[in-house]
Amino acid sequence: MMPSITIHPDDVLASLLAKGGRSQRQRNLTAVHEICRRQHQTGSRDFSIPAIGRLCETEGILKGRALYNAQSADYRNLIEAWQGYAGPAALKAPKVLASHDYLMRIEDPAIRSLMQGIISERDRLKAQVNTLKANTHIVVDRRPLGGNVVTSPGAAPVVLLPMESQLTESEKQALRRAISREFLEDRGWQEVGLGEIVNEKGRTIFDPGYSTAIRKVLGDLKDRS
Image 1 (cartoon, rainbow, N blue to C red):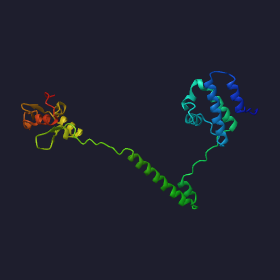
Image 2: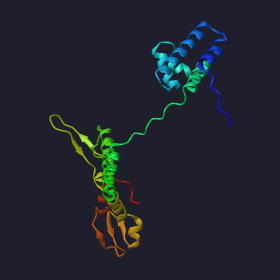
Image 3: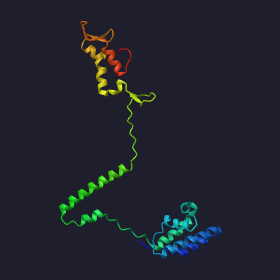
Image 4: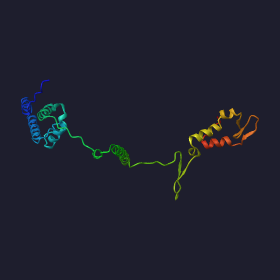
């Protein structure tokens, strides 16, 4: 593999200026070149577009985001030349957590493993607490479903709940089944008159009002099914 050839940024600037163009462009190229030169003199190897863009914007040369435009290719080529000349940016040392450093000082493997579990549980609980803190404004609607608010002058509002809204779904299903045609026919019963239930011999099993009362409780005043 042949070694790459690094072109000095001064030569890159000279070639870019030789292309001609507007005087403003040439002044800006020279100014960006000087910013990169000072960056190099400080010992920094950060010649990323965001870093140089911030310096250009601070000195009023051009907006940092303008370096990403298609017409700013010459500026990017110049900055890349400085990056190649300075070498790759130094890698940041990984940050060692204080808890990890603490664990490494424990010589007994059993105790170290136990402490690691405790620290992991602590971190999990802290994450849950932070999640709760981020949602401190919680609105709880405690108004009953299906209720009607009745107000009168000089008195606190009163919520009137229909009977249907006080029942669970399983309770509603049980009441519906108690007066359903299938349930009655399986037992040889039928609904007659004013809601009474009679058997196959005409004897009353449930008094008048039985089925109609259930329908009123359920809020179902439809015809008998």
